Image 1 (cartoon, rainbow, N blue to C red):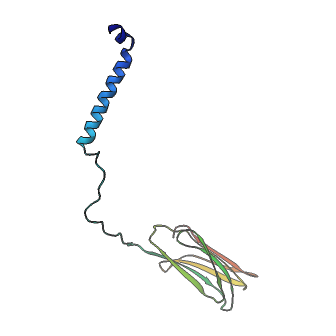
Image 2 (cartoon, one colour; image 1 turned 90 degrees about the vertical axis):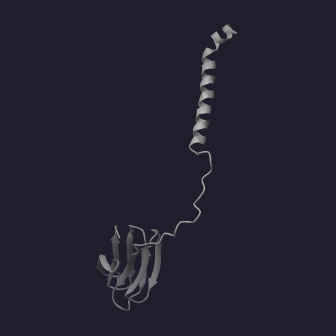
Image 3 (cartoon, rainbow, N blue to C red; image 1 turned 120 degrees about the vertical axis):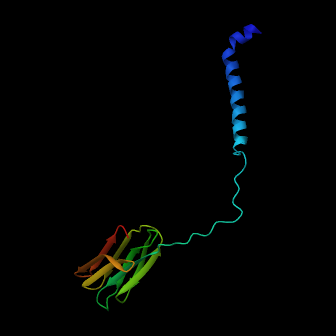
Length: 143
């Protein structure tokens, strides 16, 4: 027996250490109740209500008889397209996100066209274009 221990003493020490570690870890888990599954509270939490609603308004201005197309970004950053047959044209999107990338591009069959981006009724970007089939572009990176 002593000869067997002399040959495999390292393996015996490792096995004893593993058994001791398993015993200590299992005792600590039951001591801090981490072995029990998570349970929710008795009453559900109140619904979170948005408190800072931001309104972003895109406006296209020009002669009243103009028609054309407009592309703008919604609150999720997806491109939306629309046609206009009468100016002024506008659309408003609302969000509770802290920041929105606002972008609008319009092209019409007129010699003068303009765009505006308003955040909570304050003009943050404005641009006017002139020329044949005018195209106006407005961008606000921190609406």
